[in-house]
Image (cartoon, rainbow over all chains, first blue to last red):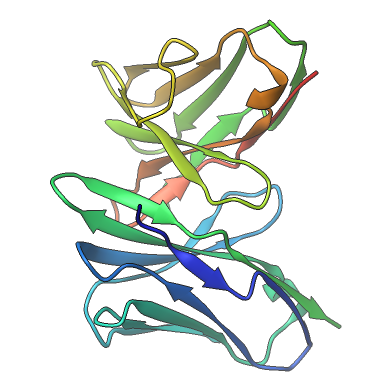
Length: 113
Length: 115
C-alpha cells in the first residue's frame, strides 16, 4: 500500500510568522507531486505541480520544493496572514501501469491575528 | 480557470433511500471525472473514475451496484448512493482534469449524512 503522509496534522501560527510543512511520499513509480490549498466549504485550489527532483515553485508568499530521491516535499509560507488559514493537501501521482493519485490527510493551518 | 460545480453541498437522507450527487464542468469538457470519498481525519480516497460514454472504473473495495456513476455527457457526471446506510455518511468530492494545465479541478464537495 502506498501512503502519502503529511506533517504536522495541524498547527497554529501567529500572523507574520513563517511556517513550513512536509509531505512524504513513496519515491517508487513517482510521476508528479501536487499541492492544494483547501478552505472549508470550497473546492481545493491547485497551488503547485512538481515533477523533477530539485524542483522549486513559488507563488507569492508560498513556495514548495521537491526531493524525489528521498520522497518528500516542503511547503513554505512566508509571513503568514489570517487568509492563509486552510488545509494544505498534497497528492502524489504514481504510475504503475495506470496513473493514480494518492492523497495525504492534509495539514490544517490556522493563522492567528 | 476551469470550474467544476458540485451539488448538493450538503444532504441528509434517511437510511434506505438513494441520493444523487452531480458534478458539472462549467467551462470545459471533461471526458473523465474522478469521485473521491473522505472519512473524518482520513485521506481523500479515489472511489471511481467516470468516463464519458462508457462504464465507470471502480477502485477495489467500492461496490459498483451501490455507488452508481453516470457520465452521459462531456460536462456532467453523477454519483448515486443507493440504499444509503449510516456508514455511507462521508464527504464526497469530484474532480476533473483541467485542460489548461497539468492539474485537476475539484468540485466543492458534498457532505452526506445518512440517519
